[in-house]
Image (cartoon, rainbow, N blue to C red; front, side):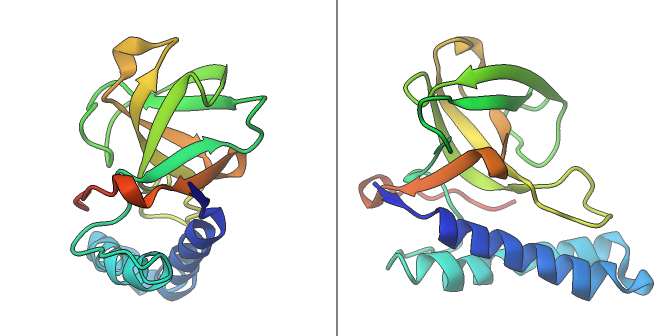
Amino acid sequence: MTDVTDLVQRYRLTLRHIWNTCFWSDPNLRHWESVHSFRALKLPLFRSLIAEPLDLEAGDVIFGAGFVVVSEMSGDGLPRVHVNIREPSRPDEGTWMPLDGPFRDVDVGLTLVDLFDWTPLAWSDLRYYVVLIERFLSHPDKVGHHALVDTTCARVLYNSGERVAQVIS
């Protein structure tokens, strides 16, 4: 496994900068068409900033299997995750229930799917990783659900042997 946190953070910060300075800063662009245009930029930026440096064939996908989210401090675990309890299979909408940890890496398996901010039509920080819960020993009923993990509490590792496509919505 390779630590790719810096690559993912560069991608996150690039998206954040583009939204905040090129879209949100112009009151005439604060509408859903701008959100859709912005989202269309995610794949080409992913290809350039993450797939190319990893020599990864991205196709029409971002992240997915092979991109694993782990706690920043492995011994302490993730302090909290927000689990989507309304639309478990939809990472872009739902009702997010906070679960307080700590959740140690040996007890939880998380695959990176996307980045998230609470309000798409506002100033954005993209502070959360959207993850798919693959393993959750203390909450096995949440396996298969999407969750949010604070980017400040986590690292992203990449295992090239496990790459499987994840389609962007």
